[in-house]
Length: 587
Ligand code: ATP
Ligand code: MG
Image 1: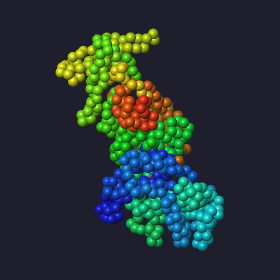
Image 2: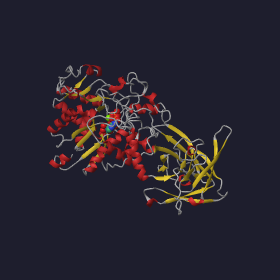
Image 3: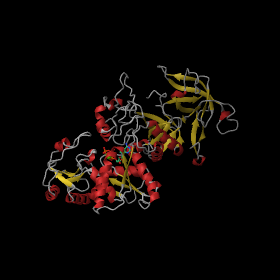
């Protein structure tokens, strides 16, 4: 792009496009493509078009279109007036098709789909010409018009470009550009019964919109000669304006611990392994939003992973870290006790109470502070007390001291237990001279620093503890010989190279290589619902507000279920990566 700006190839214009097919919800991989296309357009002062690639009437729907637009906007990008549909160009695409026929560059093939496939040849053998390849222009034109008029059933004919059946590039062996489909389309209704195919539609749509840089994923590299052939011919015929768009390819996002293929995502939803497309564990953008992942986190992720021409795998922890880094700056701190046990301060006057103050953000004093009611009876985390602590345990145990953050230093004097031996109440005494923020409060040093809520003020909340959907990096990958269960795929071995282990997210051709069912790798602990205590200020926040629950992680008020009188929070990500393995063990 910089080079094209320098040479003036496009007179300074940079126009990219994001071309989703409206047949499903966008996923994390699309976020990479969106950030790339919109990001580059922004960087070069250009524009990025949102174009629905709606050439397959059977699978597409407006419900998907709306969701796609929402997700792109949510990520922070704006297509302005440039929202288009491939179906906007159906008439033009058809006129161009007639032109190709008139030029002797396209013909109607009446072979069956199986015959077309069988005569296509292989990488080492040329294809065989169709017996219909030499039909006259007049006959082809007549047949094409009758195809359009609906005279033939599905599959009776296809329109093919007449390029080169012996080309080493299979995409140039007379590719089909129109097929018969008696099916109504969500935008054009029953106006058409022939539909243009992707390779033909995409390059022409790009050219009609005067796209300059058409950026797509690597699997389209071998289609580039066809892309160029079609628009070059049309430009030679004076039907398209120059300069023509140029296609560039980049490596798609492959991410560990999820699957990104539409086929698999549909299966997860329809078979009920998750609670719908926007389940916070789903790698969809609607799921990400509900989980509390942030647009800023995705943009940071896109920047960190960069763009390259070779396939590689990105570890899930990279995405999670980006969310942590973004939320660390933006999210205010709050207190929640997820696994509560009662703590009684024996020497604190009964019925008394006071307010302690906690900063809303340790690095951003401008965000202020809030009051936390303190009293004789508190909730603390169950694992902040241990009767027989291991060495190096700095929290509460009989005789040990710790600070209740924003309040006092307490000394543990014992605990009550029920008949089963479970701790029901931890007893402490407090030192009134140690209140945080008062002179001399820090005179005595203690290592433990615990969060708490007063029993009288804490509110109950439903908290959904989400974790990774898959428990292994490469769901469904075949295990190496001799290894038991655990996937040993090296993170950086791209498909097609030695050492690559095919996974469920790979392209269809790889499906045969899957030896285990990816569903067997689902993480059984990916969702746990608990009732927790939260500080009063959290009960009334608006849906989708994110907070750091101190010492736990980042949580978001659920987009749909959280409301007045019914606080519901989803765990976005823990504070630290609990999945990190010792170096080398993964490989
Ligand atoms: P399919 O083609 O099977 O319907 P798709 O995931 O390719 O699924 P599209 O709607 O065609 O979905 O994708 C829209 C754009 O997003 C395309 O330009 C595609 O290259 C890009 N894209 C899709 N998956 C990824 C990915 N994993 N990483 C980066 N870009 C992707
Ligand atoms: Mg696609």
